Length: 276
Image (cartoon, rainbow, N blue to C red; front, top):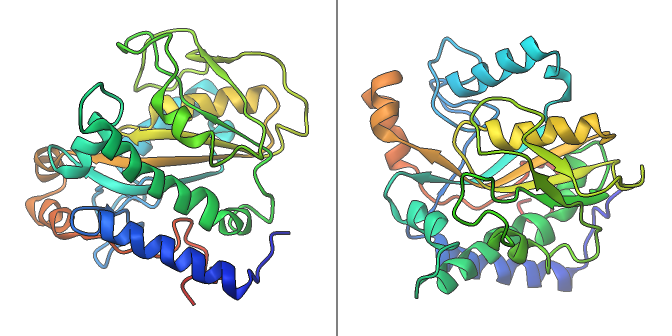
């Protein structure tokens, strides 16, 4: 089980880290929420939904596809997303620009190091608490698919995650085809067969969630190759306010516009020592 009582010195260091993160992101980041007063937030991805539906349209479609393929039970056990990236706002520019060869890319990467460090280092015990006490036994990131201009090159996200999770072994995913919004367990494959102890709890990390099809396809593939548990962690949930307004309503779209940076436990642990 994870240590529920970090030392006062460590808590103080974590608090300083989170204050610095708030200083860097607080003016523009919008923390993902998983419930709302009028029930317009998807409990899986934090995206907009009609109040009469249990989950959003995109997540519902994914589950229908997975059910039709007989793989619904192999989808991720847990999904957590850090921030919203509303189309064309600052977080959206960060998520697009961090992986491009631009002068601002390095600064964007520094911002994302804070987000990753908070979830994967500062709150690593909270992840285990929210996973039945099972800490990640390995990690992996989504590689660039064949439809990407970066196909065949090391993905910048992997370079950001690797130093943070260097004490945990990495599983490498390889690509079979282009990016798809539909469920397909054949989009990715493993670079090699990994021992069962590494497949006990795989932390699957991606930068953005739009429909969730790509990262859920990877989760299903991992389950089919022996993963007992898969947790998906994404840096940003893409939100198109025009689409939201048409599909759910202007009031809901306006609600997403008004969201702000909230801090707190990125894994939603009620026992998080940082937010007591």
